[in-house]
Image 1: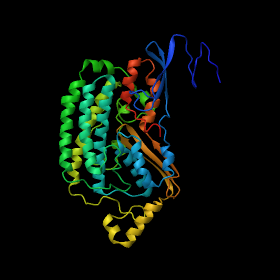
Image 2: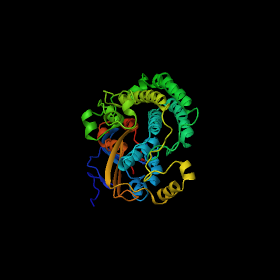
Image 3: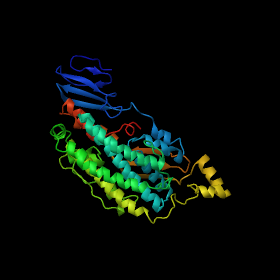
Image 4: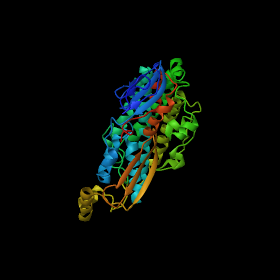
Length: 409
């Protein structure tokens, strides 16, 4: 072990080459603006960041290893605990990966419902982003307004699946429930309200606010080259001017049938990313309106017909002996997918979320790996923070929109 001396201080397990004019501080892991259990070790020259070291692992739960010791259906509710701000996006990413492994496809009505829930989830996540980002920078009113609309969105999720935060609203092979009566009317009213508040409240308060612009403009600049080099995806990549969206590049569910744009920001800074998030909320409400029209006329089937892997509808289980026996085996022993490996990427609110699954034909995944966007955006901090000031650190962390449930897997 290297001993501390005047020129090379020993800071726990980290060595910082520095002179006597700099100091080392801990930002987190209990800092309210660290957006989770992030311990950020900063070397400061006055108030300017000379070196940044993101230290993770304080929330680690071994979720990927849990998946390898649980049947495929058992693990699905655990995916809620990854990005707990947008649970349905995790449910769906895992379910679509297992479906690809099984070689099955959800029915049309289930696809409409899933896509609608995914976009509602995106709105919930983006509203949470603008609320907490504004609060970090000092704009308290926006936090209260954004949470008001987010509550309405969570009411819709609760009306559908009974949960507000950890939804478990998707199943392998489809969805568990049809939309309740009156849900579409409430959804349409919610979209109208969000579009109105977006323009007349959030943008009115923030877009030309001189303090907001001073805190965000030219702060956290991420060039397109650096964004690609660090593996950035989602709004972080599009915020650097690169129009890449998995919903367009590798469409899944009904995205190939929807008319929507990919907003980008060419300023490469925190202000551009904020504008991008606002634009994406508008695109999501536009897609939801299209999906409402697609729901009518679809067959009422909600789960794929694959008796080897998917339980029969409740009516058949209650009336047919073979269906009951099959259901009992699937619940007690779990499905046995064919041998093989898959990786399916999806566009979660924060970026590319994908699950890699290797199957050996057993009821448990032999290997499961989650590719979560926040992990890559956390690593980026060691470069993007250098040269900024301590007040900018809070702004930049908020702008990356990381959540530690999917970093510390």
